[in-house]
Length: 206
Image 1 (cartoon, one colour):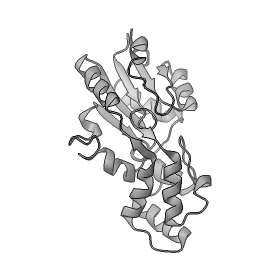
Image 2 (image 1 turned 180 degrees about the horizontal axis):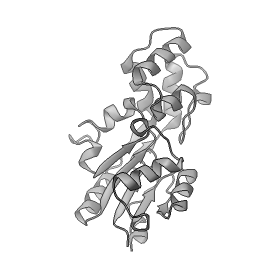
Image 3 (image 1 turned 45 degrees about the vertical axis):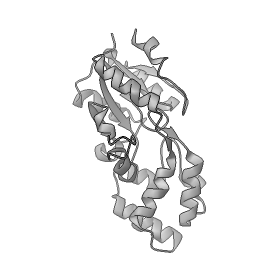
């Protein structure tokens, strides 16, 4: 029986817009942004930021060097938030409903301080609530120091939240991430970015 549900952020709770993120980073002057950015696992200084190897300030400084001008923290934030196309209300409604039904809900995300400055703020849902108001815990790559699909990220969450894999469902739009969770005995669901999963999830919970 499923008692715990772990959600990815981008592509599941929020709808991603990678092309808008690329456009915004190009606006900053990063002309090869399309090579630098990835919807699932970032590389280069983008990966270093999301893995917690560098701080948001170091990232800002390195981007400034790459584009040959001083880029502000707010400009970096604006560019990163290009990924966030929308936060579908149906998703937030079902998160509330699932918690009311007794499920424990968690976030497991490859992300960074710029994105989370919005996600953890009252601006997140447009109604004065942050993501933390919808969940029992958040596990973020840059805080833990490892990124999906690394096995250690999943093992950290299972241990820290004291979750039994056989009682846990994981939703992620990345096939490699879902495959790794499955190897650990976690039930999985792999909706496409922006897909309405709010009804189908109950098939997995029965």
